[in-house]
Image 1 (cartoon, rainbow, N blue to C red):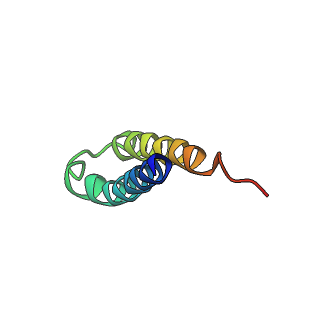
Image 2 (cartoon, rainbow, N blue to C red):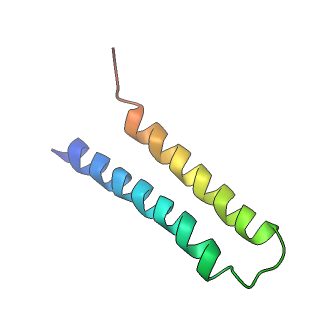
Image 3 (cartoon, rainbow, N blue to C red):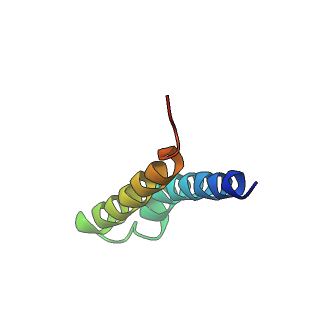
Length: 62
C-alpha cells in the first residue's frame, strides 16, 4: 500500500510540474525579456520530471 501511495504522489508531482512548465513562463516570466528566464525554469522542471520518472520506473522488471 505504501509503494502505491508513493507512486501516486510522484505521478502527481509530474502532472503539477508539466502544468507549471506551461503556466509559469507565460504568466509570471512573461515580462522577462531575456531567454534564460524561461530556459532556466524549463531546465529545472525537466530535471524534476526525469528524477520522478526514475523513481517511478525503478521497480519495473521484465
